[in-house]
Image 1: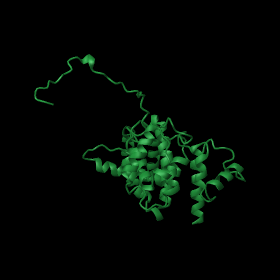
Image 2: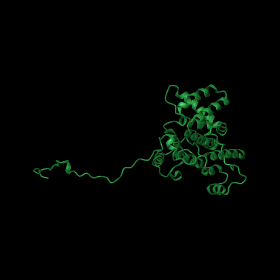
Image 3: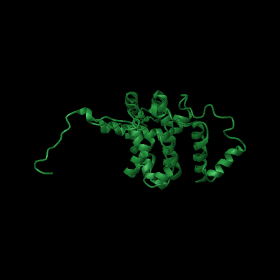
Image 4: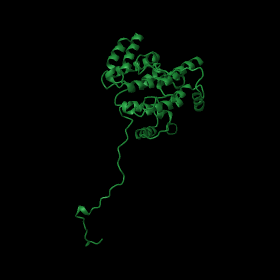
Length: 292
């Protein structure tokens, strides 16, 4: 362009062509991570816990029980991020193909940590903390104290606690391989299930919460299997054929197709009630104890 050339400048906005995108913006799907527990449980199946909890626990029961340092080794940040995004979008997730033991374990902890309200809400724990501490030398009173705390939980929280404790006790039963004793599990999950705000006494209170969780793990039969609370009484309303002389043919076939007969807990995943899950698990623990 020469020095004498003139530049034509568009003076009128009306001559500017505006191109409209053809993409429609729809409502974003309901997030799972960071949502209140009641909202995250709306997509639950027969387990009455959020799908991400059900899926991760089932995966870890299948592949993680003998994994050394389960829950103590961080997973792949990229895998965790990708899996979280798929759950938040409501997409199908294949943990076997897309995850690994440490990443799936980290995903479960991430979900629990991001709940707006802790699994054990702080406002419900105040009295329990004092009572549990005062009765440090009386196991019976401590158990009674924790029963009151468990029965005061909202339904969604109580069902999640039941589901998680059942699983963690199973993890602890394999501590000779995975090195995650009940004490180690209480230390790892205490800060996740009890949210202690920062304060000069936070460390002391967290230690107390870890002790409470350890007590729950050590005395889960007294707390869950012998409870009058309808959220926790796992033995009530059992089907008549819970202990049939001969297992139903369809259940036997399902067990044979999925895995060897001795892996009893897996069959419970497909049963219609979480009470079945916990009861079958209890029988399995007893059976494995006799075998050992």
